Length: 627
Image (cartoon, rainbow, N blue to C red; front, side):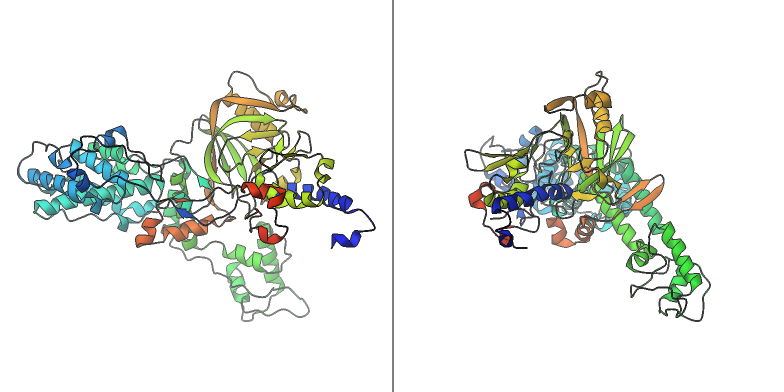
């Protein structure tokens, strides 16, 4: 309806004010508590590197400036930096004899002059140079020109990495049966790179998280390649050592077992029902449908010569729907068909592998005390002394206002928080309204300030109606999200709870606060009542003495009470993960490189009244004002 049609009945200001009063509850229901993020075009973060070993040989300097850190965060260790400026070709050889001495000489020349041909990743090339230099270029995989026992055991182990969702073809063993020193030296270097590839893939993933999900930040940069090579060289049980590079999380191991089960099933999959028109029971004129024989087979009824949807079949369908909690009254529609079909075996394998890949992104040590929040599971679990002690329901971001996948550290709780409206919501919802009625928000109890740079700051004071409720759980992060209480309690009754604009709303925030405070501030005997007594109009900050890791994960496959649970892929992360994992060649290698997503926070002018263009073309599909 055109607001202009109301002129003469109410003033324009009163009309806009009424609209704004209606806007706030709607905004709260949609998740106006959080920062909304845009999806800009990715910018490839191009790593920088040192000069090649061949170039290093030409320099006469004994020292050189430390290399700049590439965009993927790699910073050479002090031990690696010692290599800078040295003439690798002059590094001493170990006291070897015969073919081993010849291989060592060739290996030294190969690493010095052509190392980048074998290892494209700078951090691994540096590690290989230091590793072999420090052992006098003594071969790792051969002795007297023959493959060692550990070499054969490594090859056997890598042939079986498909059990962990990796591809054995990515780690081929070279031919160690040749007798020429130069070919054996090449095989030494090639296999060292292959093993480092496996270690990197096993420990931190085949695909960089930023390639799969826009809003992701895990504090896990993978294992140090030099330290990993030393472990391999010193191993007395190489299979055990290599297996240790895989994630050691309980869920990872349980998913691996489920992957094996999915692949070992010999029985035929249940018959699959095609989609089509609705099938309803009509006692006077039974409906005929070509899918009726398949329905009878799927539900275990005897076959018939006709294709009529009779009472017997209808009752079997109702029994199935009740078990599956589908309220359809015997009508066969899309939901019933999808539930009957379930997830195909191949699809189950893909989903399990995708979830195993995402467990590689998570820090290897979750923390003695920690919290796991599942986006597709809509739950939050608290772990004390590495044991689960409590679970509650949560509300997460809508599919177009996503909750980030991240690991952060919770550092304090705010009691009676002020809601500082995120810049995205100011740009999307409030600036257009303020241009029509500058006083409407003040009448609603919202505080509006114009800063010195002309940008607007809008806030809501503490209170029962505050969008954040009475408690906010803070883990500072670049996404501007957190966990918090909410006045919208009714949303927790829903099975699927993706309603917020990115933050995580907690069903039982008082119990959550009690548990966290007793872990973060031991000896103070925190109770729910002690926290409740702090409720009022004054904001209180409860700093943590012990920071608590918060892991927000995307686990569409989980083993719970011995059963595999497959959840809906609400953000299409499975689809992206599976697609990326199935890439090959140069595309797959490129997917290992991080991409940088620009800051999603609206720019300064988007937060000024002048910056608003006055029509919907200024907004992207995520609701953020885009210049």
